[in-house]
Image 1 (cartoon, rainbow, N blue to C red):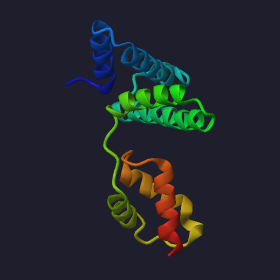
Image 2 (cartoon, one colour; image 1 turned 180 degrees about the vertical axis):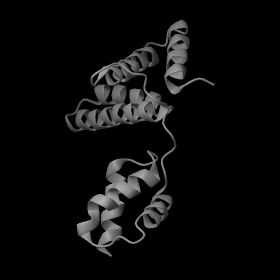
Image 3 (cartoon, rainbow, N blue to C red; image 1 turned 90 degrees about the vertical axis):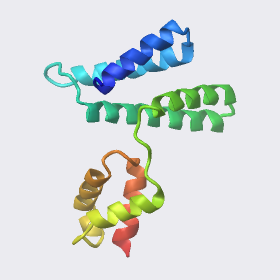
Image 4 (tube, rainbow, N blue to C red; image 1 turned 30 degrees about the vertical axis):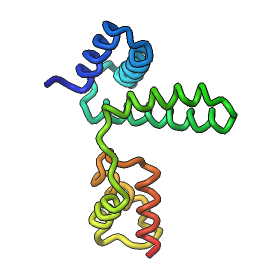
Length: 149
């Protein structure tokens, strides 16, 4: 099995052959975001799978937030399109942790840390332990909850 970027390219070609316009356009936008991330900085480089996952998570978050904004603005057609794009991107992301699993992982990561003053080191430890299996907002909320105890 190749890299995640290779998988995205292969799936793009499959969608193009199947004339699946939504999947084709979504994967093209996603690969464009990956390409932008590759040329960011001083010189072009190939992204590792974990970096590609970070780009995919960012793109998925954009779609989810856009869908919510369109829903709030009374534009259900646009919201549905954004949610459909989110579902396509979500296929490539790892499954999200449940609240109980997240609480357990964060509790292990926070061993020896307490109080709101240690929020920075606590977040760093928790994000490393979670490794992209939960959104940053959920991780931050759980860290705050556990540090306040």
